[in-house]
Each structure stands twice: as structure tokens, then as C-alpha cells.
Image 1 (cartoon, rainbow, N blue to C red):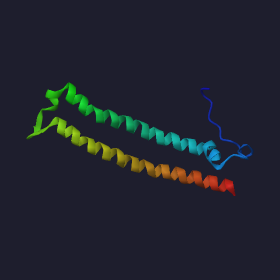
Image 2: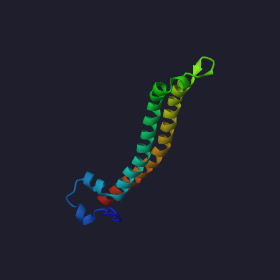
Image 3: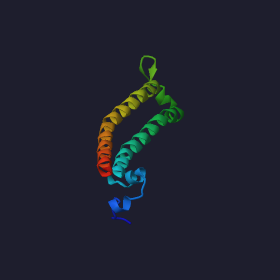
Image 4: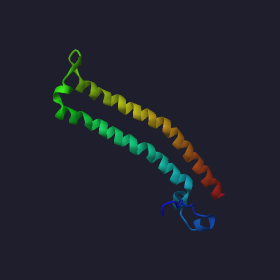
Length: 117
């Protein structure tokens, strides 16, 4: 199967298909799903690893995480605070990417609407 591209259904093949089946058969739709997954999956994995790094670090490296860096503020507190900033950064990146996803969706809907006429 390697090297074979996914083919879009031809107009004659789409007769009798529901509108959803026609959308699912479109190359643009599959590309949109791939593009979204290419951002969402790595971003989610990164955040989950980053999130669980705090309790793991506190459990395995308590002396290091208890080091004071700003008065009574330890590395653990700074790390915990950084999780908010990381979440906001990922959300901001997604908002920027979502504009592209919206454009891809609009193009897909336009193509679907032209085919329905």
C-alpha cells in the first residue's frame, strides 16, 4: 500500500451517497483532518508531558525542586506557574492555526456547494 495516494471519489461514484459521505471522500476534507492532527497531537503530547513533569520532578528530585530562587519561591512553584503560560501559549498557537483551518473549511464548503448546483 505504500506509495498509493488516497483517491477522491469521482462524480459518478458519489451518486446516491449522503452529503457527509461526499465530504468524507473529498481530498480537501482528509487534508484538513491531517493538518489539524499534525498540530493537535504533538501539542497535546507536549502539554501532557510538561504537566506531569512537575509531580514526577517533585517526587524524584525534591531537593532540587525545593531550591529557593526568589525569596520563598521555589523552582517547583515557578514550574507550576509556568504551566499556565505554556497552556496560554499553546492556546494562542492554536488560535493562529485555527484561522488556517477555517480557511480550509471554507474552501471545502465552497467546493461542496458548487458541486451541489
